Amino acid sequence: MKRSIQAIILLVAMLVSFNARADHDQVITYDQLPEVAQTFLKQYFADKVPLVVTVDWDDYAIRYSSGEKVEFDKQGNWKEIDCRSSLVPTELIPEEIKTNINATFPGAIILKLDRNRRGYEVKLNNGLEVEYSPTFQVIDIDD
Image (cartoon, rainbow, N blue to C red; front, side):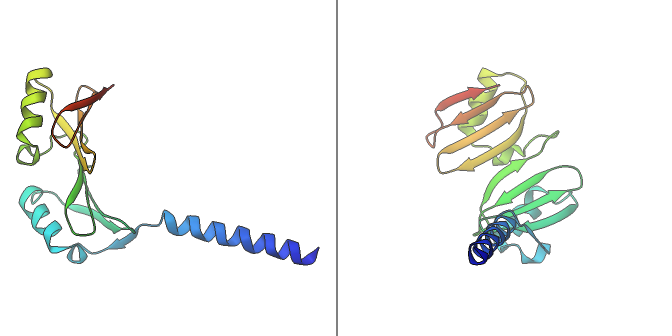
């Protein structure tokens, strides 16, 4: 009986420590970002003040005092740009997406741009989210 209680306690302790590590972001300095990410940030977010830079097992994240957030993969390639209340730099938006958004939602502003192996997802200031395939075909619109 005593042995089974010890085993249960050990199992619970292992699960708690695993969960704590899985969600653990480590704060790092700006200089610890991959060079590719630093170059990107200097080019597109030079006027912003970084609030915190973090790393976890699969990406880097930079949060700015003005509310923006940029995520990079381990190689320093951008994954997500979330500008919340300002627009995503237009140079970063693929032409096909800009053309589609301008034609379909005139006057809409892209606040968030997410890139992954399934394509792109954009969030607009009108509350809509538009998902694109890797070939820039609209595959979903969500409100």
